[in-house]
Image (cartoon, rainbow, N blue to C red; front, side, top):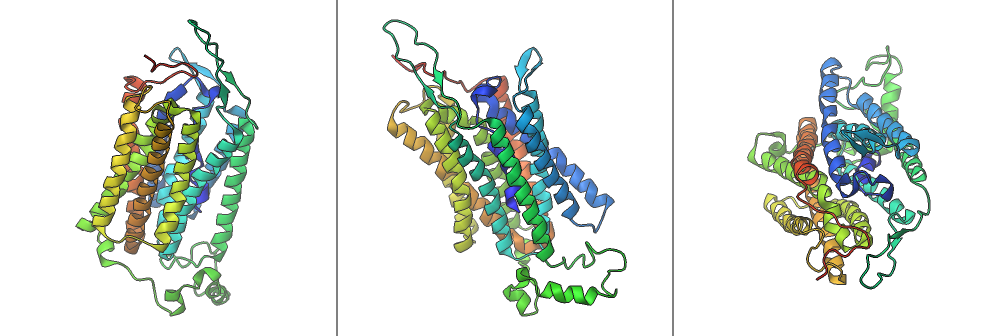
Length: 425
């Protein structure tokens, strides 16, 4: 399921063709992701107008928007138009907004659906989200974006312009590959729906007229559902229902409020604050450092999900401690961004290793906290997982909105230039 959700989050790499936005491109995309929260009222409106219809129809709309938006990026991504007297990548940013709408709405559609399933499905969902960011990053690394060669600097003269090597395959091919990945994910989800048992709260969902619980043939369908491989869970085999955590069920309890707060803060940092300054913290150390931080940081997400599957921290104090440790790494990255383009240890191997390692550990810790907090709230059922989705989106929105003025309006962070040493004596 989660593979169809995170592809739009991999568009933050500032490519040479997108020179209109330059190093500020991640900030623009973070704001567009924040504007994608406009999809939340639409999902809420659907719930009001079609009560009892479930989340399957909105999920199909989300998947369709993702596929269409990514497919249109392939031919249109490089179209530029003047806005307020400056050239901007209008088509790219517009389609990124479409993907953001789909991505933001996904958390409040997929997560409530998962309330009918055992907890391992929730962790698999977060794992899929992590892989959906990792796979395109690996593809971008294989593409060889940003490879350049600096000409030798003549004595007492300005060095010539950098020589950029062509990519191994075009950006259009990259986006077509992403579109194929999303189509595969959507098809896999539809196949999963055929195997899933019907939600107990809506036993007739998806059945046509005359196919209710007492209609002819319903008993045969129920028998087929009992044989579904996804129902081979211990609590179902014993003829019982999944247990509910009383503490998680009470959303107003102090424990649940703290877990939702952790989700909001960690998503504000990982989806809004830190992505907006990733280019400023990494690119002073070179494009290789930037791409390694992006790819290995994305790899930390699914690794954290795998770790949560086998070793889940259920202590609120433990999750708080992990969050504080992640905040320390995040503070170091923010310091590097503020000091850009001349942060400490620039031009050294130690500086490159530190910035990449900080990104990996920061994103890995926060990813683990998000999965663990979501898993602990799973016991509260659909209302709790709906609250999880809202906390994720509200945190992401606040983080992105908070970072747009300093990055794109007041220019607190400064970018460097390829093959130009701005930090020399």
